Structures are given as structure tokens and as C-alpha cells.
Length: 313
Image (cartoon, rainbow, N blue to C red; front, side, top):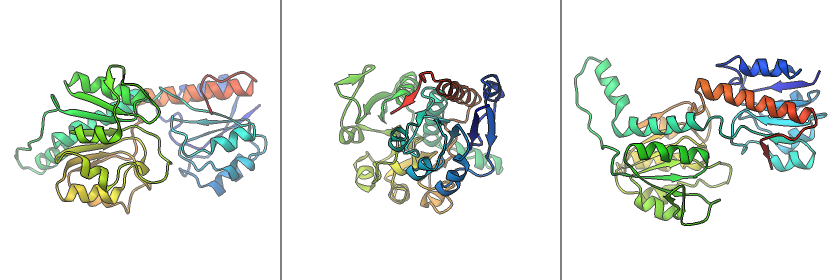
């Protein structure tokens, strides 16, 4: 019976369907979810002796893949594969698969929820009311404001549809797309997007080196703008963002992804007007079931010698 290492604690956490799919595919689960994410050195030891692995944010480096023994397929329980050395896996003949679309709605919901929470100061209003006070908390309406979506893939487009329902103007930037527009949304340069934006929502992969949004990009935003990051923590210079919040250049920020997680030393922990969530963009019951069953189906296909539906190259 092929053995599948499971290292992410979110696998099947809200649904039995992924575990049932493993059993029905004739696969044996080897579960190691006591700590997450796992560093490369520890992961390399676990990869020995398994035919497949399903990982989360674990550090899957070239050295891990080289030590993988009989590993045939590596599944990402999610979409972003910036924590996986895909080139090294491909060179060694290990197929990498992910779950595109499985968590699209969940992440888009959270991104828009953070935007509403920051704009209308919902956490502050709750804390004040729960403390026995009766204050008024003012903030902007979203209708008529411009939302710049940076990264216009499945999630970015899903956020755009939600913004349209709130009568927002939407512009987008995506380094992987060309043309005047996509789905009726103007595609602009990053500088143009930032100059027009009342709010910015990030939906690009990380791992590119220097932060995409640093002090100069934050300064280019209109005073009073809002930044939302439900993508990757290394897209944003956290110290620069905290400074922009403290000096009032930004109205607020909603952050679900951090450079280091948990973010105990992040300057955002003490910044004003920020709503912080613990990387829960994909943490809906529906997404949890879909990610698990989708990745299991492709892992099973590869182990049977079939072509996966969601290969990553």
C-alpha cells in the first residue's frame, strides 16, 4: 500500500472527506502534524520511506527532495508553492501538484472582510462596546472608492466581483498578464494602481526577494488608504507599514500573512488601526474539504501512473 506523509495540521481538519478519499484510493496516511511548518532538516528525515507527501508551509528545499528516496509526488495543501523548490522536484522526477481554486472563495471572503473591518473600525467598536462604552466609530463607505488588486488570478478576480457588489471602482496589476484589461478590469502598472487606490489588496505569490510594498510604495498611496494582505508576508515591509500606520498616512491595514509566523516580533503587533488574523484565509469548512480531496485525487492519479489535473511546473 503506497504511503502518503501528511505534515499540515489543516488537512481534513474540518471535514472527513479528505481522509475518506485517502482510504478509498488505497493509500496509507503517515501523519506528522504536531508541529508546522517543519524545517528542511526535519522534513528530509520524514520524506524517507514514503511514496508521496502532502505539505502546507513546510520548507521543501532541494536538499529535502534529494533525500526523498522513493518520493513520486508532492502535493501542496493549498495554492502557493513558494515554499517548495519545484525545479529541484521536477529535475528529480517528482511531480508537484496543488489545489487551484479550492480556497479561492475563502481567501476572497477574508480579504473583503478585512477591508470592511478596517474601513468601519469594527474591531474597535466591538472592544469598546464590550467594555461597557457607547462610542461612535466613523469610517469611509466603500461605494465610489477605488480598489487596486495586485495579482489578478482566481482570488484577485473573486475579490473584484465582491468589490463590484459594493459599487467600488476596480483596477488591477499583474506581472504575469498583459493587455488593456481582464474580465473588464483595467490592467495598469503597479505605480498607476497605487496612485489611484483608496484601498489595495495583495494576491501575488511571495518568495521574490525584496518586498513588493515598501516605504516608497506606501508613500505613493493616497493619504488615508487601506492595505490588505491575505497573500504572503514577504510581499510587505512590515516596519514600513507600521510606520505608515503610526504617522497616519494609512487609515489602516488588514494583515493575514506575515514575514515570520507566528509574528511575535513584528512591528505590526503594536501598530495602530490594524486588524491581524493568523493566516486563516483558506480556513473555511468548504475550502478545507475541497483542498484535501483535490490534492488526494491528484496524488492518487500520479501513484497510479496517470496524469494529474493540477500539475505545477
